[in-house]
Every structure is written in structure tokens, then in C-alpha cells.
Image (tube, rainbow over all chains, first blue to last red):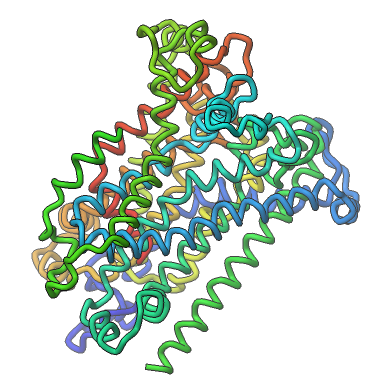
Length: 325
Length: 300
């Protein structure tokens, strides 16, 4: 990120300012720049830092929101690790990762390459952009509204999906999709795939523009088939984007709340419970603030660990790449 | 819908800018190519189908739905479902709440991002990498882990059930991303321009407002649009903080009414339609900016 080299002719009077892009003309030297960070820091402290630390502290207390919190040490954490509902919520988060990260990324890689490489080149870029916009459309909806749209199609009585199944002679497959424990989670996953698919496609297609067509032609002359070119050229060039998409979508998958709240409220039973909905219901329905804070803290720890692991893996991959070339 | 896709095919001239010119053999279309194209179009239709279903059924009477099902066109246009929902949720009020909250957040968050990025990208204050990582925490951590303390704090200061609580929270969350993106943009700001302005005797404050902000206006406008739409789509925090009907945003008002006795099958469809129309409008207006912005955000 440090791009500007130190300029020799700058006045030696302000050595601490040597790095700044702007010569030391204002009052107070480099310290003057700190003034601009004050509003951001104050807001950040009040809205993020204090609540975050407070929430961690709350996880060591029993609090129903009215009388002062009562310190109970690690009791909440012990309870958490034995809480079957909590583990179910995490397993359901894995299902969300499948629906929001794994399926969209794999499918997105394939579709982006197909749109860019084949449809864009042989049938015209305008058709490729049109299809891309269609795939992207569900992404723009508020996720709660997207859930209502799909939920409406999955209605049990006379719903669109059940009607279609009947129409094509598969009436036996009719189902109360969101109301039965065996298909509720699958239905939510379906909503998320629909919403999420367009995001990797748009990003990967933009990344593909960096691929040098000559590289492709050379590989083709060497007898590499499409699959080999895809694997060895495309994937390796757009790998930074694959990392970004995987990381941001994984974090988003762990935070899913809107569709659960709108469609199932975690039910039937605990079949669609996720950590964020579980902590929300502990906060505002059971009034178990301390325990809700414990669930939220556990989720935060997982997100932070995953982020660090991802960034480390990416740096390692980049270093390896740098060493090879 | 099928009409749109079939007319789109002949429109596609072979020399569109996305497709680089390649040797003649590339442009010969095999049966396999046509099969893949057909598959891509079918997938597009499947993704688009829910929108069509919602549109068709929002203008149907419940009786019409009961007799002819969800897949047929309405026998006659029926506006009562939409009208009933519109009046029940006082839709114009919800629309205004969403516009006001998202608009204020977009402007305030860009302002904070500009100040932060000026200090980090141009001023290169010490520890800037750590400052950016710290700010990004706001974007990364699950909102649940801030929820109860924020709820308690805003209740204490009397801002609970007030749109300003939501505006303040999202100003901070969105400006985290803005700071990150703008700092790297400002980090490569042309030095000559800054030096020239400084030689002319401009102060830092003047340089920021008369030089840096006008030059970076394209990036700032992308950020404004992004923050607006992201805030519009938010759910958990508006749901928690805006409990009275008069303060709710569009997604919250629609989601909380699901399962209500008033919501028969076509009214539910109408509610989904009203929820998706505003974002569709933004998409159509800002499509270009959005595609450019999404990709800029990813690569930076």
C-alpha cells in the first residue's frame, strides 16, 4: 500500500511527515491528520467497540435485562457446549455454507467461464451480459423479501411448486416444504442458492477479463482441452477473486437471519435454527441475555478465526505463486 | 419472458466488445455450443420464474387463484390485494422511512469514509494498516454480538424505536467498508496535484474539499449508491430497533406481516411484489454503476 517514495527535496524540517502524500503545510504537522480520524473513532468506539466488549462480558453473567447482571463465571459457556440446540444451529450453519458458498462458487466458476468464453465469444457479448444480469437479479432483493418470494412458491396448499409437480405427473412428490422437518432446511438452502448465485458470476466474469486470450490459444495449440485450460489457466488467474468470494460469502452464511425469521423461526422443532436466530430469540423472547450473548460471542469467535485462517491461506498461496514464476 | 430471450439472440452481433476477435474457427458454432446456450437460457428462465409468478399472482383474486391455480394468467386484473396491503402497512410511510434512513446513512457514511481515508490514504498516519483492520471489524463481526448492548444503550438515551438509532449504527458499519476502499484509492492520489494546491497556499481542509473530493467524485458516488442499497436491504437491526409501525422500513414491515390473518394467498404475493419493486427500480437505474462497483470492491 505504501507507494509514494520519499521525495528528497522535501524540507527536512518535518521528518515525521516524510511519508505523507501532502507536504507539511497545515498546522500541527502529521498530527493534524489525526483530527480527521476523530469522528470516525468516536462513532466506532460507541457503536462497535464498547458493545462488542460489553457483549463478551455479558457472556459471563446471568441477566434478564432488568435487574443488574449477576456474574456466574463460565456457567454459560459450559451450558453452551452441552446444548444440543446450539450444536444443531452450527450444523445448520454448515448447510448455509454449502448453499451460499460451495454451490454458488463452483456453479459460478463454471457459469462465468461459460458465459465469458463460449457464449460471449460465439454468440455475442450482449447476450452474455443479458444472461449475467438475469442470474444476478435475485441478489438485489432484500434477503427477507427474497425469502417471502420463494416461501410463497413453496406454500403447502395449492402452492406453485406443488401445482407444477402435479402438472408434470409427479404429484406424489407434493410436500409441505417449509412445514416438515425433513425439507425445511433444504427449502431455506434453495432460497439462498437462488439469492447468492449471481454474485460469484459477476465477480468472476470481471476477473476473466484479465486472462490473456493468447495464453488460451497457445494452450489450445498445445492440445489442451477446455477442461484443462479451465483448470490450469482460468482458475489460477482468478484465484484472488475466488478467495474474496469464498471469504465474504462464508461470513454472510454464518450470519443468516432474515430468511429464518421470515419463513420458519427456526422450526419445525429446531430443524432450521441458526446461531443468529438462536441468540436473537434468547435476547428478546426468553430474556436470557447472558446466554444469548454467549451464543453471539461464540459466533463472533468462529467468524474471526475463519477470517484470519482465510487471509493466511491466501497469503501463503500468493507467496507460493510468486516463488513459482 | 421467452419472447425476450428469443429476440435477444439475433440482436447479438458477433463483434461485441466483450468478445475479443479471434480466428475464424472460433466463430463456427457446433451443436454442443447451441446446447450449452440452451442450458444457459433455461437456467436464466428458472431464476427469473419466481419474479414472473409473483407478478402474475399479485393481480389475481383469491377466488381466481383457488379455481385456476398459481400458474395461469389472471382472468381479470384484480387490484384489491395490492390495495389492501398498501393501505394496511401504509406503504408510502414505510417507503419514506426506508428512503430517509438509507439516504442519511449513504451521505453520512461517505462523509466519515472521506475523513478517515484522508488521514489514512493521504496523511499516512502511523499504524494505518491496523486502523483499517480495526474499522473492518465493524463490517465483519456478526451484528448479533452488538445487538443487546446497542439495544440497551439506545434505550437509555431515548433513541430506541427511533430511525436515528438505525442511521447512527449503519453509518458506522458502512463507513468501515468505505474507509477501506477509499484509503487505497487515496493512497495512489496524484502527488503533483496535491503539491500544486499546497504551493498555492491551500490549507488541508481546502485541499480536501476543493481538490480531493471533486476528483474522487466517481468513486464517492459508487459508495453512495452501495451504502443506500445495502442499508435498504438490512433486516436484523431495523427489526430490533424499529418496533412501532410508524418507524418500520419496507423489508421489516413486509416480513413482520407474514402469517397475519389478513394475508391470503394473493395478498402475500402482492406484499412480495411491493417489497421487490423498489430494489428492481434501483437496479435498473444504477445497473452500470453497480456492476462496476461490485467488481472494484472485490479486486481492491
